[in-house]
Length: 138
Length: 138
DNA sequence: AACCTACTTTATAATGATTCTAAAGTAGTG
DNA sequence: CACTACTTTAGAATCATTATAAAGTAGGTT
Image 1: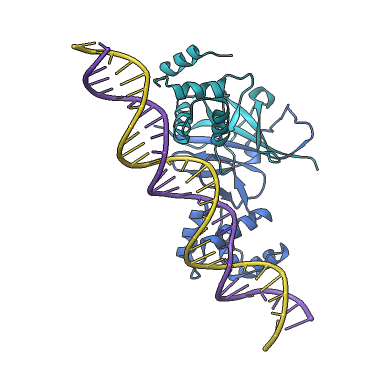
Image 2: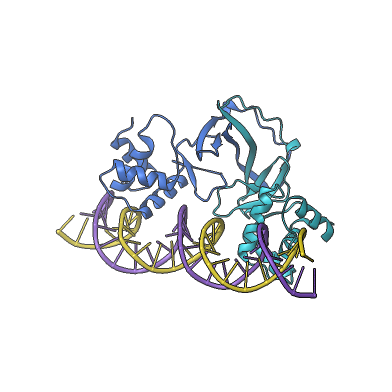
């Protein structure tokens, strides 16, 4: 359980002013025990119900994008019309449950070492991510 | 180089009527030597320039979606605002060049065996895909 | 060859996520 | 307290995609 001061320091150290809105968003994202997977819409709903402030959609977009840029959030690759984000910014992978549109973390250690035998000259690798799509058994 | 009759047979055998538009789209997609990665917009441009028919955007969307459903096309997971498709429908993986938004195939054999040590009870695995994001060296 | 019917195509409108705008508000510094 | 740059905001704009409903067509039937 992190507190307000921690969030303020984190924001400052990343060059973001600790505004009321950003602190509320930090609370919604990081004041929880498990890592959190969400869409902008999910986050907006949570903020509306749990917070007294009303935070505009534009601010939520701006803040999530800013958090992504300073590596507070990770964007996850799924072919969906919406963007998914993850509070777990470490290298790891995901299950995506197509029946419920939910994401589940798959730790690096839960996957054997990935050997890439092909290289692309003149390019550097930014990330290697596995997406395992799953569905309910019928 | 596949010809019109081949496309007509393929379409019929999948329960799709071989219309002028669908045959033109087949040509654009499959009458080429390498596998083809594209967005709807890419395909629309190609059809506009290479084909005499004018094919409406709605038809392109419908057809690409139909082709995906009958496994003529594969949709690829990238966090992009657009959907990417691949004429290579076999199990394989991708590089995504963030500098140019281009996809490059990564054959199954180019990746060591992927061992998933975590399982999700009550779910079956539909696909396991790796996305390697790359960037130009500075 | 005219006819029927279900499947297709099409232009256009509608939707939904995301981004832009420009005006009002606020944090941090002096 | 004043100033300035950074933020927030409501609402408009944009872009990909999907829905609508009217006109067109394939393929079988007489």
